[in-house]
Image 1 (cartoon, one colour):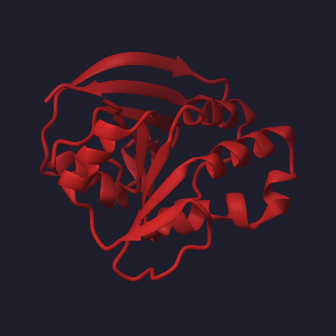
Image 2 (image 1 turned 180 degrees about the horizontal axis):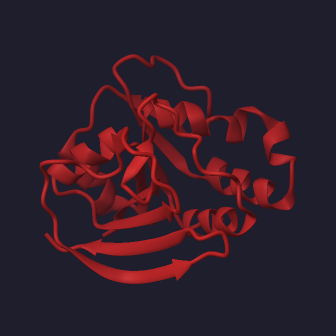
Image 3 (image 1 turned 30 degrees about the horizontal axis):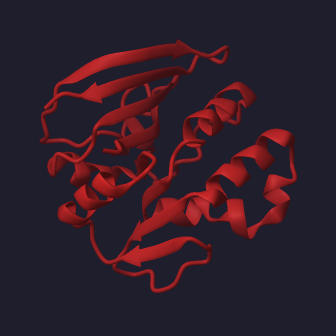
Length: 186
């Protein structure tokens, strides 16, 4: 059975975006970016909320993005090769291939995807991931913790949900970012 992995950038105080809704808080870093590609390479399906999907779609729709460097080209190739499922009540069409739109996260459908998948799945977007946590669907968290405190905004992890975790890996990058990988126990 494939795993469902929550991958997120977050501030040290636990937010993915600030109080104004900005989530471009984390500066580009080649070492961290190469790790994103490495972790994403074996993924077969990305589960996204609408906003994150619209942020990621340029990896396919804007060729100049991939042409910036070998690192961006590698990530674009990996991203384009995976299937995408976008959960949105407002999006009616996708701008990328290998993409389908669903009106809501259906836990039974995600369990079936995990059961039949030949590669792991990732989930992105704090609201969508919160729904998946509540439904007991997430198997692993890959948290990129950035050395900043933003003082408020959208939490990276759901509030009101309790899950015990087991630390699988910790890695420190030269820019002070820490990657924390956890297995979800309960």
